[in-house]
Length: 265
Image 1 (cartoon, rainbow, N blue to C red):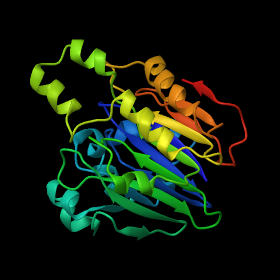
Image 2 (cartoon, rainbow, N blue to C red):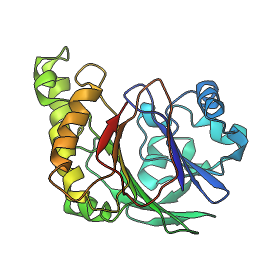
Image 3 (cartoon, rainbow, N blue to C red):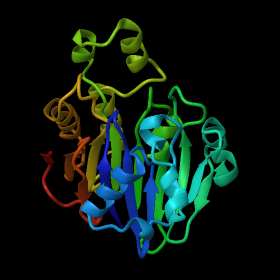
Image 4 (cartoon, rainbow, N blue to C red):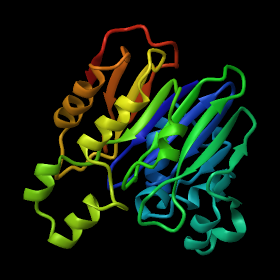
């Protein structure tokens, strides 16, 4: 199984998952032309994507939805997300939060999350041929027991590490925006991401990819240091990567975690 993070942050999110000869796009948070450019930059033809799975309706995750019709992708979204996007209701294949969507080369299990959207989900994708598992959890206000359980025993975890709490308090946002970000339906801080990463860590987890970093209230170093410090007290000996907003990140094929703890950005 392979993964490419085409970009992650408040300006757009999109992730390609590949299992066998099938490819699935998780979120389309860039305009179709930019989405095409990023796909081709990592050597992926847009026509090779079979399905688009949306985690929720916010613009930085759904901006490029028109690309689905252009390249004939099947769209899967929770019923609430489809309804929130209006015209998508007829075109999407809806599912209830918590349901599993069976695709050709992988299954995608949805997990309800706390965020200020209609019916947002995290996902856990499992390759049909190898059983490799990847979890994607971003735009999460707080961690529920259901989410923590769903993210156990993964091969790769994409985890939101949105903001440093001190930087957020001293940052440029008005109080109402700061309260939303830090609230129970907002975004995970570096501290919360570190705690969740440590809870999910095990010796076969090969990589944790930090995602959705705030460009105003965080830095790759702060996020990575916080998560690596927590992981150093666990059985995890894989690699911590930090995704960027403007530069795609190619994650190598998933394998058993045997390397020393490291970080990269």
